[in-house]
Length: 488
Image (cartoon, rainbow, N blue to C red; front, side, top):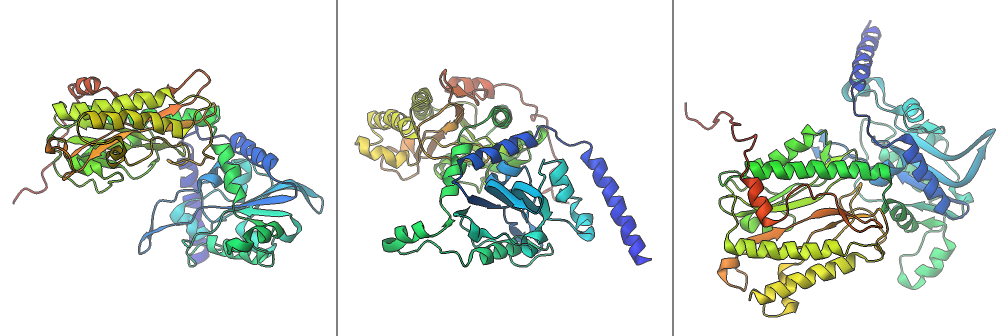
């Protein structure tokens, strides 16, 4: 009787899950895209080599509650699978097992009946074949019960493991068990030495390679396909609409948290699954903290508000920053600093051409800012400009907000940020009228054969255009919630 009841419950949840899946997004990367990426990687691998990828670890939030799961970007790039406890093995050449020929194997977690009740049906072996386009798929237990003989390869490539994988868990075999099996399979293979003196000779003898895979994957991921650019552009435009709506809604009585909430509500309205990184909303002196994420100032007052937020859409993240005056008008000093940063960014964007590199972008933007700060008397030498502009100007974006790349010259269809800034904390060695002014302007720029294309141009950048946008009526002007602090 009990068994029959459990089966009926499982069947009910299975039906509910099928109904839910009938109305889901369809604009994810295609199975053909992921397959093409595996083929591209395979073609760049050394002869008689194997590449092993593990899914991301589940991170604990507190007690028995985990953070929302987010897949390892390389694993997602190659598979499209968004679930944990999985392994992908790619071979440089075809392998033969009995009468079966294959050049890749995917091992996935097969959810049990009770697990499905709480977490849904999942992909499993069947889904990996039907949805992801893999032909050689097994449950994770097969990776343990029928281990691969890695000793027959000339090179075994994988990423070094971090100490953040939990041993215990209801899911078995879990990621920890899969990694331990892999370590056991390669523990007889010579490993590269830690000592720098003999590392080179030891590495030459070892078939274990924890370095090359990063370079190979970076070479693929730094240049975006049309499919990828479509998703990135959507993520960027969603982020721009968030900036625009906040510009219209902003007032001195708003909190940093409320500002963040408007941005992220816009993200969700457009179907963005996550934020691409922790949202940064810093008013006044808080904006001088480069990765400020407390966002707990209750009233932004008449300060500048630095807003660095990016929507993640179908795995790809934007990275857009605007800095606006909370009361809708820049003061004289705020405008001078803002316009200086704008001029620096314009110079940086103009240098985003094929053949240049991120160092060139940084140099031209930094030159404008350093000379401007000196002319204003904020610094007494060009060298001291770094004090107020302490970070780099550009980085790649994609599946990571700081996306994988090989730090070389710009090529067509690379997309990077251009984000100069000036930050003058309270107590700085300059006139007090500049204290607490923090400005960063960040845009996502595509490198093309016809010059740079600013994907985030939708959100106003010029100081006068920001003021004009802030004067417009906001859909949030009449949005009122009950006062929960009222006395009874």
